[in-house]
Length: 407
Image (cartoon, rainbow, N blue to C red; front, side, top):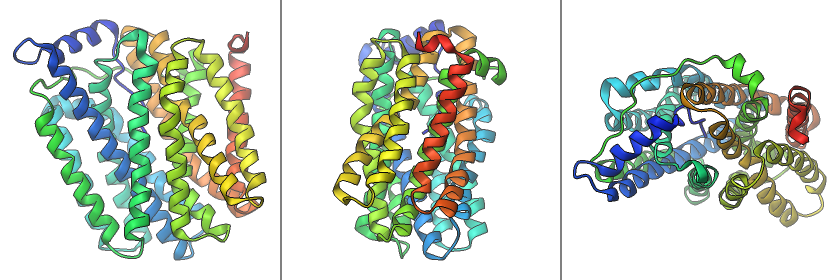
């Protein structure tokens, strides 16, 4: 998933809420279809993203590519996000929010069709970058829409609903692979059909089209130093989520399991995200989110090491722990985002969110190759060792830069 660049400043959020809610007739019911439209859009994005990541990882793994090479492929999408996110507000201003959503869906469908026509590694790498740029537009515009109606005192819970819907979409993609298999063009055709269907709720969703009027400046270093607990959580989450979606199928193959089992592991990881987002979001509205983020990181470290330890003791135990662990580390994103929303206001909040998306994208770029290298060196469990090391590094930097977070 992608950071909320446009988690709005209070005045703009209130104005957008009034504009979207009243629509053309001045009535409040416009809020519901607008929110449903945005949630449906990002859920479909999650389906396409997870299906593509798992499918390509399995295909490349079966062709004998190294885990590092496989990890480089999803990193292309991270680079597209890092570069393309800054241009999305200008695109939305030029063509309008709904038209941009339609255009992004069209590009996603064409990209999937191109992937179905070739098995070439370098061609997939280039197509993956185009696909990632289109997904970035879908995420940023949809998140802008959702964030415009998020009440400040329930910010964590609302973002939890959003994150749960995206995680649910992530879970559906791998399940499609278990139904249609991975050896033919069928999963690509299924994904294309889903992206085409996603246009319908955009057409029916709302008569009030929100506007993106300007893009904030992005002093990344200033917000990195000012809120390291939240911004570095974005980097850690981007690395863990992307590596998990792309390399859990490879982990299964390296551990002697089938490609279908690998797709199921991705679905279990996503299931944990769905189950944990709402309760963790609710908790984040009641306590210091810095302490909650540190607690999540600690539990993520212990969970990763436990998964490496129990892998040979029982597959059912491993699957149950994977669900819990996936829900815990998957909460980093929503809690960190809510922390930024509660700390910054006005233009500072927009800039902080822009820094968050950039660090998330850097995590997408660095995470899969790093975890893949760990698997090449230490075997299948190198995947979990690498994630534990990343979260340990996150805790070390956070406690060094923000020691008051634990007081």
